[in-house]
Length: 432
Image (cartoon, rainbow, N blue to C red):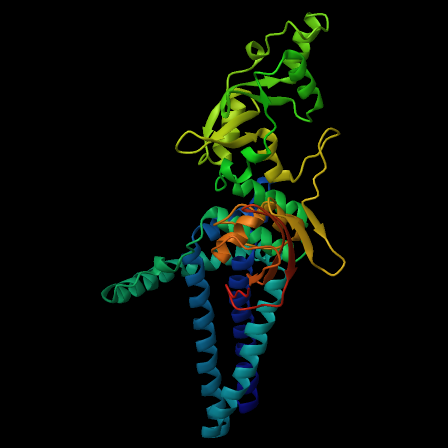
């Protein structure tokens, strides 16, 4: 074989090696970045290629090992062959020629190009290469398993485990992170993200975080006359009203407006003779630590929409309804009888006027912020928690990248604040 023939023979071998290297590198990237959810949907729709992709990904370690072995064997073999041919043609300087040429070709055509194509079209490329990849995994898989066993054996004396690097996130956290990423990339709208996030939060939030606090509960004194109770029910925007006797803490029942109106109709419209307390439904008390998921199931099982929330001492803290839980998923539900509450009012200068009783979670949803709500449920509670005191009106604090200025205070309650988003500041920095 003359020198000219040897050169073109070497070029052909290098070309084939580059194609195989690009195949292994691109396949690894495509299969790793492919959406498992979309591939599973395609398999359920009858796609054979999608079924192959899912079977390959089920043995992820074997797949990655086979791709790495295939890529390295081809790349090393091509480098060795090319170096030998070029040294034969050009002498010792052929080593430099081989190193320079293969470095450019491997990086550009066997790494950057296939990986770029794969990361931009992972699903399509994974499906298109499913059968060749399955063949490669079947051929190189046993060798990959042997190499993996050898690596495990070598790491065991050092107390290291291959499985230790797996994700520590729970499935719920992974879903939440994926939804947040899709929202950032424009694939999921804010309303959809909030709904999915609210659904995932049902197992973490408690009824104490969404309940109507007892200071805002609409209740009726059972000691009032029947006429006064009827007028109070008609004046209320709610259909269920807790009845108390002697003390607001002593709830004796829950009066449903429909039951009262039926009794009033049966009495010919005369309220004087009604025994209102006898019409009241039995009070249902639930612990404040009950999760929203459990409370939702309980509402469905009991076929009721209303419960009173009590603390560990049995004291009434507030009330929770089915609507309160649904609003955590779909957002505020307003009807023609709801009383408009201006709890959050964005201003022209970019600041936000908020009532102290506004839930931090609701403020985050309304403004697309990320204020922490682990230590406090309301905005006022967050300020008090960070300030470690009950601040006076006019006091301002900077924390979590926001400026909180107390506008009004009633006794020990912060009733109104101005919140302004700042440029990033050191965590927990405050100024009074």
